[in-house]
Length: 313
Image 1 (cartoon, rainbow, N blue to C red):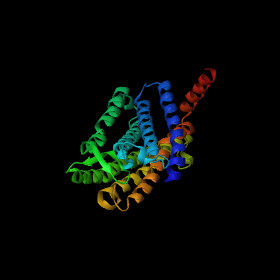
Image 2 (cartoon, one colour):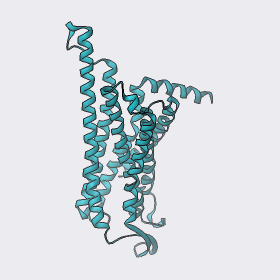
Image 3 (cartoon, rainbow, N blue to C red):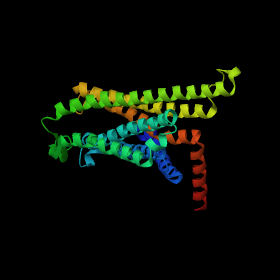
Image 4 (cartoon, rainbow, N blue to C red):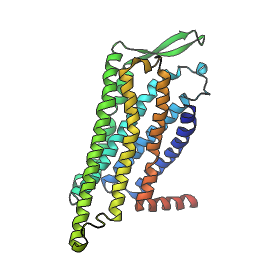
């Protein structure tokens, strides 16, 4: 936990925060003439929010932070932060699916995509995702309240989190929906959009190849630019899927087993698993800058312009 929280996740998270700020500035400089940059900006905002939330969680888990000097116990402080982190995680998933859907439209309906996915439509869709998923934060916090309690182990009174009577029943359903429905729904969307995009790109490329050079049919069916588009989408979707599975598994375990919840005999195992979850999510939120830089010539061009401007300043 010390290695994951205070070294790896901390370092990757700081780099990711800088990278997502650069992403936001880069897309803003490119302009919002269509919906693609709007969606990518929304993804950068959600990733930035998740990484900032991670920094708060990492400070709470800091082993050198004396719990006796705090106003509230660390596990109780986490209750108010962990659902914010979950909110940004789900927003990132749906925004990634929205980006994949936009790319599908660019290939399937190239003549109509500008009419269907305008800047206004993309803005409304992405804002709606943020607003609709705010229940991830509101619902769990409505089932707890803060009072005070004297703890003999510390010989002092702490601000203490108490649960409402119906919290256990509601949260069991919450954990199951959060662990099974939303992650699987996002994964299915990403897989479907990726499969459609790859199939359509290959079909279009093979058709152009047959028309331009019938005697070389079947060779080099996908050109370099199209391979980059396929690789970029597959990489972003694959990284998200790999990184979302640990969170879904941990949420499902929280809903099924009382022993790994706060106060349970296996709560330390829960914290150990959570340390790897934070690490994987930090990687997921931090690699998009590298993917954009590697596979987008326009992103590289604007990035170099920003570097020259900063150098002059």
